[in-house]
Image (cartoon, rainbow, N blue to C red):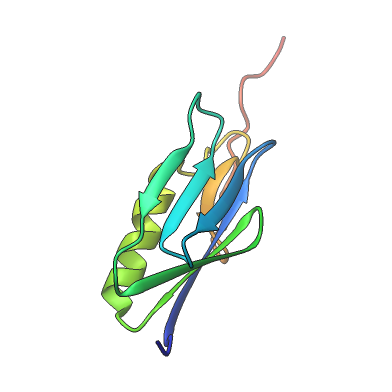
Length: 102
């Protein structure tokens, strides 16, 4: 399969990890929950993990690649106070200040 479209995701957080199995057909995420989050990858999409915190979604159909990347991101969207979560590689999260102490 010749991959023409790519979507890179970055996982930010202590202990957050990703791994793939079955030649890029299953994606497992450790996101701080009591269980692993498991994704079955659609047929037109292939998933690779270059590092435990970098996920690459590739495929020949742009809509399916981006839809799958959005589904993965929706598990743990970036948090505005600490910046933890799953975000696109070129995404910038504007952090909020938080509570002021007296």
